[in-house]
Amino acid sequence: MRKSLQSALLATLVLAGFNLSAIAADGHKSDKPASTDDAGSSNGFHLPPLPADAHVSQSTSVDGRSLKYTVTVGSLPVRDDKGTITAEVVFTAYTMPGKDRPVTFAVNGGPGASSVYLNFGAIGPKKVSFGVEGDTPSAPATLHDNPGTWLGFTDLVFIDPVGTGYSRALVDDKEATKQFYSTDNDIKYLSRIVYDWLVKNGRMTSRKYLVGESYGGFRGPRITDYLQTQLGVAMNGLVLLSPYLDSAASNDENVSPLPWMLTLPSIAAAHLEREHKLTDAAMAPIIEYTRGEYATDLMKGRSDPQATDRVVSKVTELTGLDPLFVKRSGGRLETQAYLREVYRAEGKLGSRYDSNVTAWDPFPYAPHQQTGDPILNGIIAPTTSAMVNFVTQTVGWKYDGRYNALSYDVNKLWHEDDDANQGSVSQLREAVANDPGLRVLIAHGWDDLSCPFMASVLIVDQMPEMGDPTRVQVKEYAGGHMFYAREDSQSALSHDVRALYGVK
Image (tube, rainbow, N blue to C red; front, side, top):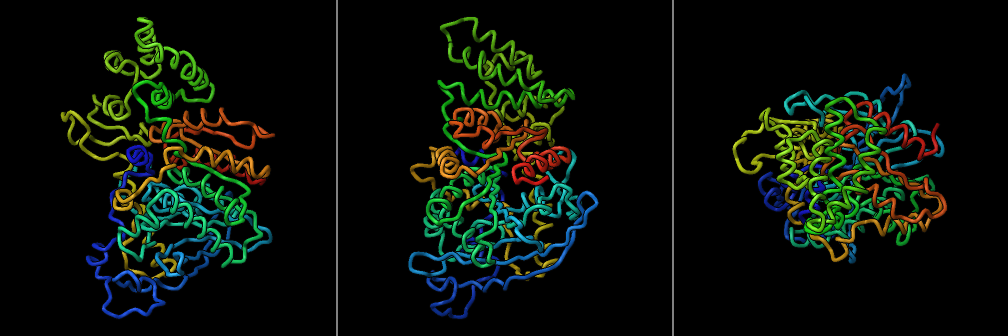
């Protein structure tokens, strides 16, 4: 499960989490004795308190309309069964005046990613450039108005899980792993944060929505189900961006055709895009081939000597790859091998998050890829710089601790509970069955090889309709894991989300 979870990261994690060693290195250990009521007083070390909630008024322009809103950066405590504060979760909220405005909670993935990518990349009122071909880490991390923001029709609350952003555990790594870095407890405390924010802000009667990206898409159905059945809070809608819903779909590479079925359409889509031929109509026969003849021929194996030849011929046609490379792989294209092969003549690598985003390969003659992912290597600097400046300078939430846009430490400490391999499909089905008013949009980029769209297509096709087959929809857009970084795809996503929210 761990290998699968790590491959489903919004980003491969490259920053340390807020652990004991980081506390010592940053000089945050206090000599002042803490009272029994102080956060962190029971864990053998003490942290300076987080600042009080800070607010600032801003505006953004969308389609010629000026939106005036309030930004709040603040924190909510996490308590254990005894009432002791064991962590503090930092959030960024954007709210506008108006009666009956919905509120949307946003969480990213990893595990170990903060919510900055959804905030400054997808749906917040401001945006920083990252994640597309040509973006560079050293470019100015300048925020500009986001034409694809959802703020025009919903308030937004971005949640940073413990160990990401400025959110922090107040217990040691062993206890934090138990309380926060595990599949089940992660869902429980994040659901409680949603509940507590609603209570604190008097929004329990508002319409409520949840958006989760990547592993946040794994979280989404589970949080929705837990809120429904345990905390008494019902979501009106659920948006899953590039979600990681079922690890089992890609685990068995020895017999099942599924691992190859999931990635082939995305590889074919990337090839079509390079030829400027990518359309829904062009993808339709590829999807049908994948779920039909391709799957059947893979399953035949040596029982049909011509099956492999048919696969190799068709896969070569669909991908534009060297026929010898396809033949040696038996038409089963391993992701990282493909990402080196497709740009080998140029001395570059493709990204598993969007194979048409490339970087130079610093070790082109090595037998295996020796460097990080092109997208992941490029997104941490602009997002971290933009967020730290925004929080500490623009909003004035003055804190000098380290901001973790991504955390390797959280990911390494992550513990999968017994039911983690079952994914979140069961909770998705149950949440939809429990509430006939719940609507779900699952959105993918065609080129994403980390969380390929074909997995969601197959998953939803196996779900019962439960009255209205349109209540759970899968949509695809040009681009990869962060397809919203492309202006046209972000605009199309915004259009589909507005329909989910019932906004004209």
